Image 1 (spheres, helix red, strand yellow):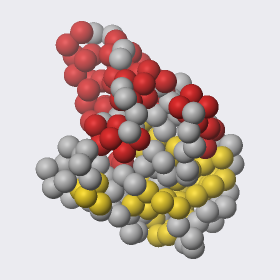
Image 2 (cartoon, helix red, strand yellow):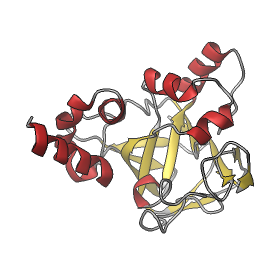
Image 3 (cartoon, one colour):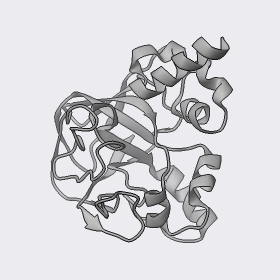
Image 4 (cartoon, helix red, strand yellow):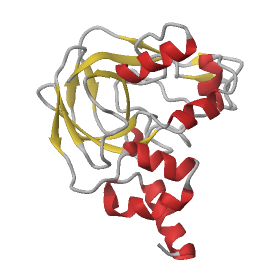
Length: 222
């Protein structure tokens, strides 16, 4: 398991974003050399966990619980076959393109050691938006991406440090529950009756998802 690339984006004006400022950092490109990774601060204030990476709509993106976004190269390859086009590392706006790691099958709270120093913790799956659809320029992309159910993973930074392309990735901790990124994604998108099943992941869940699960149980029961 390893990093194929570390990808950073710069703020760029585009016609398709729903950001009132008209700019997005979704067009992420692989970079050479080490990149500093650290917790960026609370959502709404902190941006990306990677130095030099732009997050342009802080109310929805970035912050400690969405500090880093990872996507498996294997999932990009599946989409290449379906879409009939090539998808470079970073094509989905991911910071980390991985190899040999089941990103969407990772458990919430699972911890990855990346390179010699950095430890990241899985919090949730990525929810597709209009900007993502415009960036890919694929009709009905939000629905197609949601239907596939392999959203990649957001991660929080547990131990900061530097990472670079080629770094090994090791699963340093795997919780004993069965709440995966894929299950969490289904629960918050197309199958809300699954929300109670997320509760065993506890505080490792993205706090917004944990709140949704608790509110669902309070209203509907388990």
